[in-house]
Image (tube, rainbow, N blue to C red; front, side, top):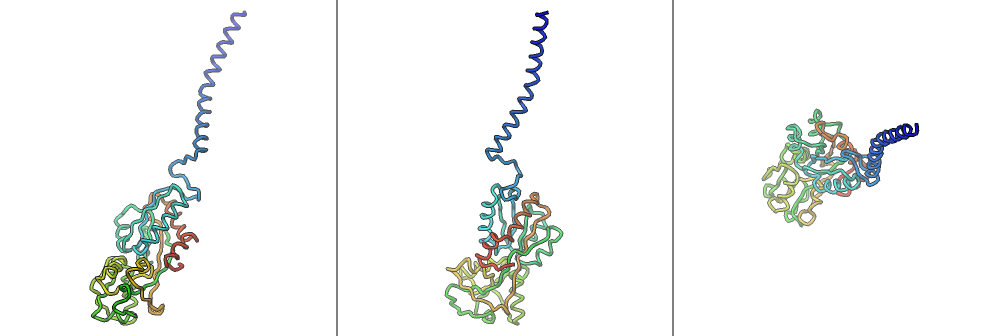
Length: 274
């Protein structure tokens, strides 16, 4: 009886040990997960500290936003660790063509509402994030003594404008036509930065650009203000792209552009409140 009892107790102990092995393994998995959490490990696609989903975003943006968006992008990445924002800058009409051709991107910001409205099938609901006005850009010191829009009609001046299908070109035509001023440009450029470059390089005496663009080259060009009554207001709408693979992260970035932090950066660069 004693030997039989001993054998039974030994068998029970072996069975209990076998059952405890998988339980111990499960306990180790939970412990590792807790360690990873404590160490700050973050699974792919998780939210940043501010709640925005982590992602690598591609934003198509109007050329006139080149400098300010680089600053804004850096600020957004700092505020949202784990998120990277890459910009592709071009004339709004070029950006529209890219969207229609299916270029991989997550959000779009144009320099006019007309271009954005033409992409309603490809975008979410747009929000105007900033406004701008035009100025006459001339060489440093204004060697040709340009003082107003009427001076641009002087055939001795080399004036450069953006092409009419470009937002700034359309605004330029609008204000010149309203004042019945006929200008024969020496060239029509694909975006506002190309117009500014012509003036910077001395290849043109004057050009119509956004105020914010002229302010990026204070040592190379002077800006001649245009009275509000003769000027045009440029609106900058931002929207997510329906083809985005990071729709939540794209929506978070577009929404951020209207926050006080983003508006401070935009207005610091000379953009007006939306």
